[in-house]
Image (cartoon, rainbow, N blue to C red; front, side, top):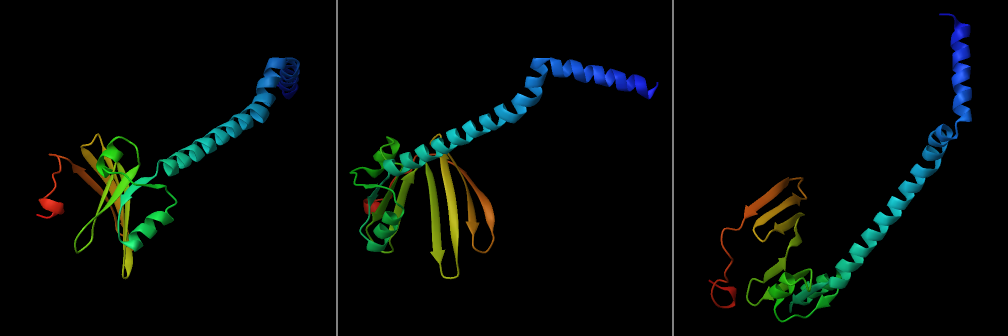
Length: 172
């Protein structure tokens, strides 16, 4: 095949393509305008959803019944609204609050946390441990842990019976 024939066919096809508006629109307008516009809209929508979710979490707040000043101060530093509720467990179950924190009387201090999703952090001399836990369908517990020593792992569990308080004031 001769080069002049190939060149003539190429020029004819290019001229036809430039005359066809639909082809030009699909080649130029869509990539240059529609795709950046769609990405911009998606970015704004996601940003609004994140803000709404954050505001909802902060406005929902937590219920707390603690007497130790350092624990109350740590809860107040989270920026969440702290509500006083009579029945902390019921407040979480009815979705009135996102979580509840209860300090049980006695020594050593016992802290109970009620919630579907819980993040815990223990700071101790020389390090820390963080746990993230999620209770699904009121039966299955899943989560992860991480320590300052680099250890990471998974936590899984299954509720086989309902939890019952042990004796008076949570003592066996």
